Image (tube, rainbow, N blue to C red; front, side, top):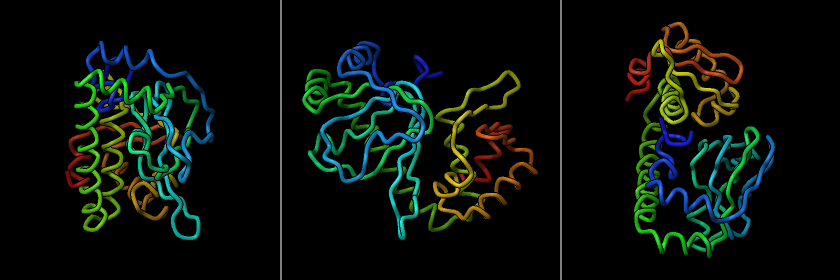
Length: 227
């Protein structure tokens, strides 16, 4: 279980307790409702955001205004730090999937924090390198895998990062992501995503309810995801 309810493999989970508390002490607290935009693509990057509660989707507009979901983030994740520290404009939009609370850090505050706490800087660098590795793996996956494997891979990611193990070995994931958003995230059509979910249910690997996922066999799900 990640500390203080933070998502696994998030920045806050990877920090020592002293650095985590120091980061929580700076910036100012904000709250967004479902559908609110935390970060807008093209805006000037003057801050970073540490998610404390709730989940968001990271997305861009594709051809003809089609939404392309790039990823999901949850409690403990740091958003917008690369463009903020580098002085660039925002490269993607971040939208709340539910009520979200976060610490908003100004660029000077973030730079000061990183300058004073080298372990936090190394943790941030490690996460940035991990994102690059994941992005490369995702490009290969999209080029070589069928929809079933791609949808399965996204479900594995949800279970590993945000899931809560139950006494029966199942993993419960309560995330407000709909089937259309899952399809975009998986680079699959809505029809292919629906077929993939149906197949995974018939194989006894998952149960799905409205805005809720139960992973019944994570190892077999990894196998079908090509992992």
